[in-house]
Image 1 (spheres, one colour):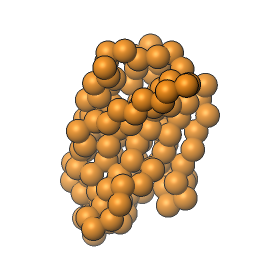
Image 2 (cartoon, rainbow, N blue to C red):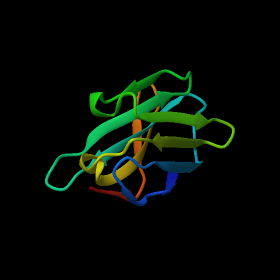
Image 3 (cartoon, rainbow, N blue to C red):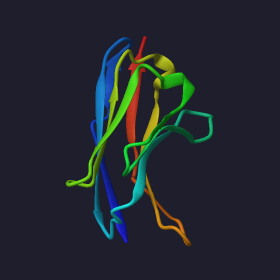
Length: 118
């Protein structure tokens, strides 16, 4: 099993910055994809950014140029640096880990609230 613990959410004014962290523990494979999703009120959960253990990144169009995903493989931790935040970034942000080849297992954190005031 894998446990994900997120931290770093909060309330920030538009234009501000926040940094999210997600520490993974348990049966973590050396090859995996770690990422962040978010669910805004009344909307479906959507991908924000992901990063493979080989450092290949993927960003959703709305956050390109403003958010940066990074990871520390030695600590099994993934980060999301969020700059130039907008009110539409307000959502619950979830950490995600996907690993496995023949059978892909997906794990989720409990979520952390990010609120951007205008």
